[in-house]
Length: 233
Image (cartoon, rainbow, N blue to C red; front, side, top):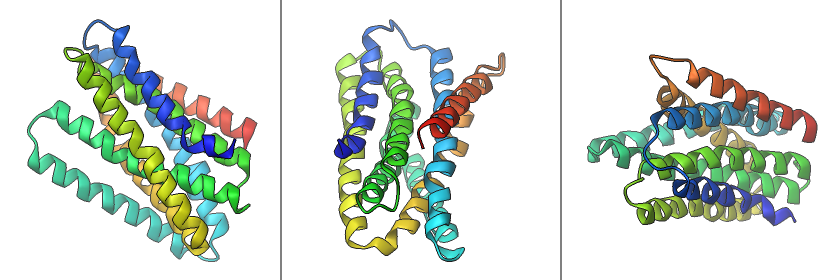
C-alpha cells in the first residue's frame, strides 16, 4: 500500500494524457484552466507537505533555506538551457514538464521515505502524492492538447513525463532512507523547485487577457488541495 505513493502520480499523468481522445482540437481555454488549477494545488502542497515538514525536522534555519534556494537554482539552470537550445514553444513546454516532474518525483520519494522511517505520517505522504496526482491530470491534459494532431506522440510524451516521477521517487527514497540527514534538505529542495515552476511556468501560462479563468481555476485548485490537507493530514 505504501508503495502506491510513487505510482499514483504516473496514473494521474496517464489519465490526463488520454483525454486527447475526448478533445478534438487544441483548446487554449482548457490549457489555461489546467495550468491555473495545477498552480493552486501545487502551491498548497509545496508549503504544507514539503517546506513545513523541512522546517519541523530541521534543528535550525539552514536546511530549509538552503534546500529551497538550491531547488530554485537547479530549475532556473534547466530552464535557461532549454530556452537557449529550442525555438519550438510547444516543445519547450513539454520538455519543461518532463524536467519539472523530477522535483515532483523527488517529493513523492521523500514522502515515501518519510513514512517508512516514521518521520512523516503515512496520511501526509499519501496526501502529498495525491496532490501531485491531481496536478498531473491537468498537466497530462496540457501535453495532450499540445499534440492534438499526433495522438501517438501525445501519448509518448505523456508516458515519458509520467515515468520520470516514479523513477526519481524510487532513487530518492532509497538515498533518503540510507542518509536520514538529507531529508529536510530534500523536502525543501522539492518545495523550492515547485514554487519556481508555479511562479515561472504555471501562473503565467494560466493568464488570459480577456477573462479571469486563470485565477478562478487557481483558486479552485488551492481550495481543493487545502481541504485535502486539512482532512487527511
